Length: 327
Image (cartoon, rainbow, N blue to C red; front, side, top):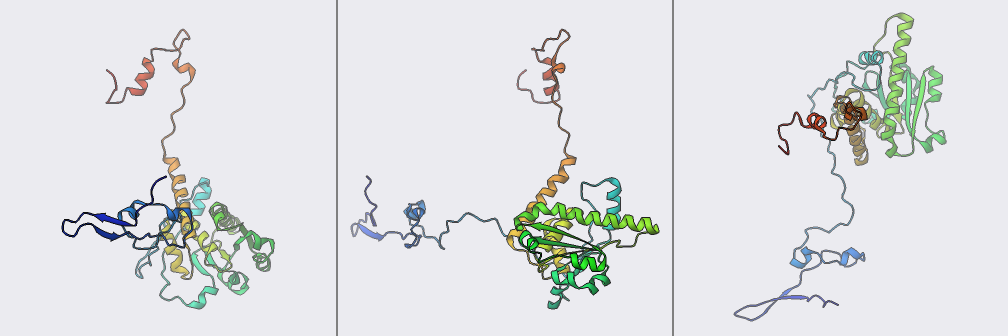
């Protein structure tokens, strides 16, 4: 059994003999009864003192800072870039989703506007649930679809829905139900498809009826309880998907139109992960095709035996290389 550690440090002094120095204090609170609180560390043995209380929790990811955009800054959204659509659908969506630019409203924002919906894009609005019940405003704004982002518990209790207002106005309604915010990242593509399919159907309906299409041909109101969290996160993901914007400019774009949106760190981390997924999906088509696996017939000689010399195989593998391991 090892001897206990001495409480003082001694060192030779030629004049006054041995000197005594107080032992360094532990940087762990004496009330901490966890096993790791009593372990000896190099900092403790050398007398180093921590500048703040030590934390044993798991490290957290860095905070994603969203700077406030400049008042005179403008941003014109690029053309439609989403994947998974036919050439005809892509041509229609390029026309329908075009002509959107940054319009800064933060300076003129009023607190009462949080109860109303704001046009984020020419064909997309964002607002709270009370805006989805304002039939007069929906009719005046030309809304053709109500899309609610809600929890599964709220859906089961029928507490949040746009069905009643949609029936009164003769427009469409849809819902995306998630158990928690962690499931939003899996629901983003489904909700994006709902909006784009609605725009495609509105375009084709106008084209078949009159031969011309007004702009916008349809308008979707995306809402949740407050219009500041789940629905706002979806609108950011929608812009990242169809326009190819990165996380920070997409949030800035939405916040410039609806200043009261709130994104906590968890929502930002989730949107940042969705950004990586979108980048990977766009990089896959540009990747070089995989080399097909060699068949047995490719390594058989004229007599039907396997080429054990491997000359042809080595020439195919190393013929274009400058460095060869053996001469």
